[in-house]
Length: 308
Image 1 (tube, helix red, strand yellow):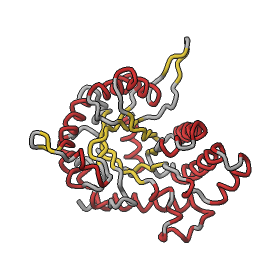
Image 2 (cartoon, rainbow, N blue to C red):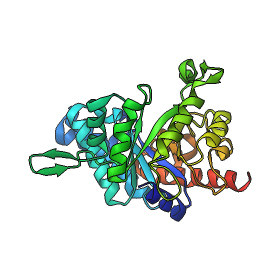
Image 3 (cartoon, rainbow, N blue to C red):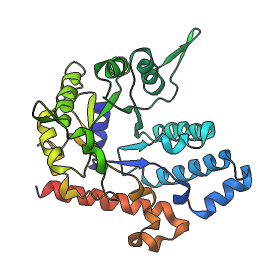
């Protein structure tokens, strides 16, 4: 799957991923009205609104992008109905031949970690049959529990040719409370990056490992260091746009081959219609506003890479 991601990035010339992290406040009134008219102001109504919102954005952007990243918490908040919308979104994106990065941030040990891994990336056996429950292509994973928590995911990745992105240096302001702590004179995120490179050594695709890393756009200097520590790991870069990251900040996340990183924007794209820059599209044309935001993001990153 890492090779498919690379191939699609090269085909689209767009090293970006659209974060499908819907909040009801992002969803235009006409979509909410229709969903609530059918199912009432219920969890099912909210989930239907999210699904219809996602579908329109996917329809308007799938030809421009290689991948999407649905954040499962935005669906889980609506319970089982929300998870059903998550699954419908994953399946629809795969119908459109998009690579799906499940932003699930799982992390546990032993059989529990294995269950998370098969639930999101692998297959589970029921009687004589096997099923792929959520069936994302990649998943985000928390490394705090060490190798015991990562190995079950790596095993599933090897079996099913899927991938993971391990949290290394996250984009949030307080990430440094733990991630920047010095251990033997070095920041913890560097040690985690070294471990990511090690986990990926026996889990390689053609040129890059199935084991990638999450490094926030808001920390470009750390990204420069980590790029050298993890030369064969793809870096998922959150924090672009709404969190302050810009194309010029991101050039060091990429290798000299122009690959090695994929940059995420969530509300900067899916809620573009609410921004002054794209207000002219209006609420009714929210998905066209998202398409315009994708095009602008591609241009911003492409220009930065050309000028580095």
